[in-house]
Image (cartoon, rainbow, N blue to C red):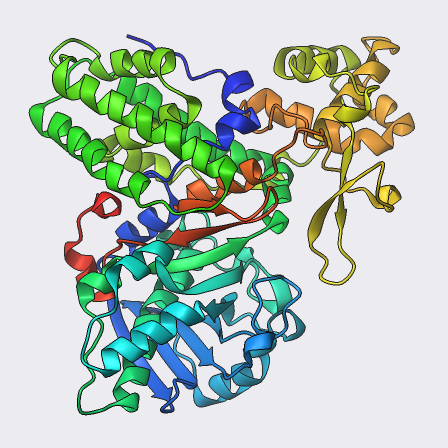
Length: 550
């Protein structure tokens, strides 16, 4: 059986992309698999009785060392903010390439807590900061200092002791440029070093809370139970700053989606599956119900999605346990077709992720294909013709050509860069000023504009001649020639529409990171949890690949 990859015109709609969930392809899971046989150490832990000071953690293999350097600082409650405009945080971190010297640590002590205002060197790979969930952190300290474990119900509602507000890499603020390290085998996957930083920060939060509790009451204090530690992750607040990434990196986006679609295609093509694979799949579906029922949010939008996800996953579970025959040929193809007919988009994409769990031999090779050398596809082929470009647009952007940009609702919003933090923002074109500063993120509108111009030109006109008079459309001409080769490189939706739900763009990227339990705080930002349920560093050599469902 030869099954076609799913249609980009369907899959690349934002409502569908905003229904994606973590999977074996997710970056934090592939990071753990890659680094499970590295040596983990806590190299320095110099904190005072209140938990302020410096700590260093490392991963080592042969001659390669990555060191997380942590700076825990005292700040006032009114200085603590998840907003990007904050200037102080409870802790700041950098991932250092190699073993830091005393001179390195002193230099970084002066720079890392400043974050964007500071300056790093080529020795530093990633940069981050985080704030305590004060209510949870204080409750855990108080409990442990009395010899008690904290309230599990309270911890489950939040899921973390700290949440990060940004993780930077790839040359920002003086950090090492990607070209310096891109050939290293162990980081041959997107955002692998960012995942390492977040994972080691998680361990720091456990060590810090134990340390503060011990100093508060040395005679009675106990450490946080490792089982509780495993059920805590690192929180993250993510806003619109992340959204343009998936527009600005079309070949990378394609490779992420294509690997996911390829995995699904190959699983659907399996003629027979064995009892071990069947049982593992069923077990993951069963256990995943716990993830859904413990998903806390006050967002009506998200609660609605969770309600129908839970209903449909239970319906699916009943189907595979009581009605479906896995012994038939191509069982996962039959299951997928049933999902498309019987369940909502959120459930379809949720189960697609679960289908990958028993098939590491299919998924693992695809992880290596998820990066992209984007510079290779930057040049516009100047010898191609207007006719070529028209044909590509008609084939690849057919839905977008149907949008009427004369209607105000279809161009109501615009993207711009904020002056104070140089972060992407979204505004109403008809109620707010600044549309003259609009960023080139309205791909659907600009493709339609390009197509209309092409219609009046001779089909044999070469691109170099067309560009001479239409250079303002260079960015979408480039994208059209990219989508010709990369079918999943473009969001097939209008990113300036009145009906745009920006958090769909955030969820798409965060699902590939491996985030759990999306908690929208508005339509423009959300909170998530990362590494919840993940093995602790001293367990990595023996961990269960399906830890996320445990």
